[in-house]
Length: 319
Ligand SMILES: [Zn+2]
Image 1 (cartoon, protein in one colour):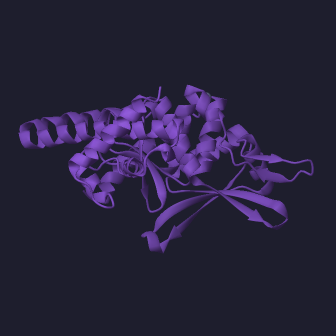
Image 2 (tube, protein in one colour):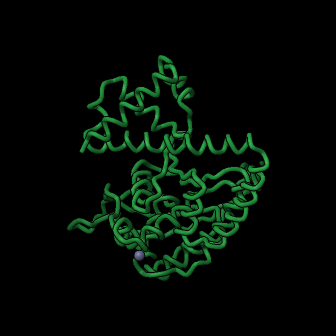
Image 3 (cartoon, protein in one colour):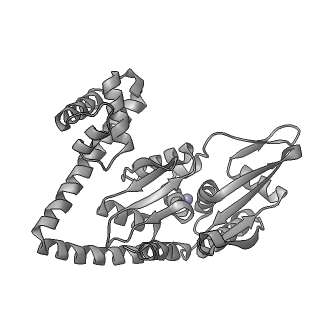
């Protein structure tokens, strides 16, 4: 499938999202927070001077962020764009904040605090407000999608993802998805964590959650057509069914590993199971045989199955 086909669906979702009303004051701050963590950069200069710039590819997203900063924080960024010949002339929008505006932004987002001398220090903790209110969770996921998200054309596959710049953002995204009852899968790509949804209901549910209702309809149409075509081909239908079932099982196994990790730590497992848990969590889409091949030394399918069952049992007995 040509790349622009993929981009057109994803781009269409973004076009729809940026036209939504800016919403409540709490949600505006959540959107600014998400865009800061996906597309913002801190620049440290001598004398403790700190400034923030944003880089965004989607024009509407840059415009929305500009509006949000002005409306919610009375901050006036300078907006311009760069065009890189290296990236096929793709345009990147840059929003730059001066020192005073950067300071106001970081304090509003609870990302920084000032000491008694007025010196600003960056906090390592993740701002808590987007996690507590449902409206803000949606706003955060939406803006994070505008800043770092993409989805494949549903004609081709069901896949919606966020590229997390750092592990803390990946954790936040996973928590938000879990609270929205759409547990995400995550894996490493080029040293960055990608958090994604891979099932049709989840992808469509996420579009609705973010407020892209027109895109939900478009996707449902494509899905119906696709299912009709699949039904015409029993073999293909079978594959689809099997791979959905496999991903279901994979998600359950990953959840088991995560439960163990959160409650008692993976280090409490025997080395063989610990390694199995690591490889499973890093490769949500691999089949049992493929997982076995990914192990060092390689394992048979039935050995992989046995170990994953052990992990699931351990997780079930944690209560
Ligand atoms: Zn809110």
